[in-house]
Image 1: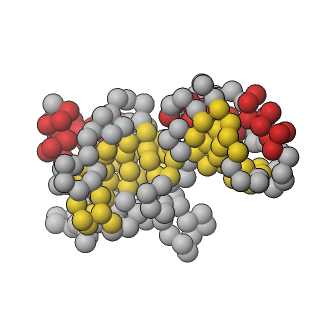
Image 2 (image 1 turned 90 degrees about the horizontal axis):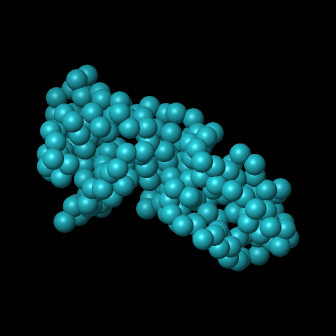
Length: 211
């Protein structure tokens, strides 16, 4: 059930039932944004809407009358990210899915992912697919995950924008820089954007992992 909560003097927070509803609601607001909107920020179960005025009663009426779109992918452009699938957890993920490593790669590249929301670190997007993914985090997180690592956890896939600790299962690596302050926008993986991972393993130099 939708619930609208105050969030400062110029924003409201909309609570929704699940991630699918968030994606559809975010897509609806992107397609027909409220007057004076400054920012729309989705998360796992909420969408925050900031406007350039303080008439929050009017904004609340609009938000309560907004219906999530059935096709949550409307409006998002498609970005392809080449991946060398040599991650340290590939075999473990294959075992979890009861399939071969080749099938893991095939499933990951066949999926059309959508950036649901961002968090954890600047430029880190939580990508959700249309298939059922339920991959547990590693029992022991790594203290250092290299930048560009492509990984899975829960229902999400993601790309580490910089070296950081992390407990996601590593599938491979990409040279695509998903966060660069010298670019506009700095974050490549913004909410609503569609992502397709492309297998670049055969064209990669051996032992080419960057640290």
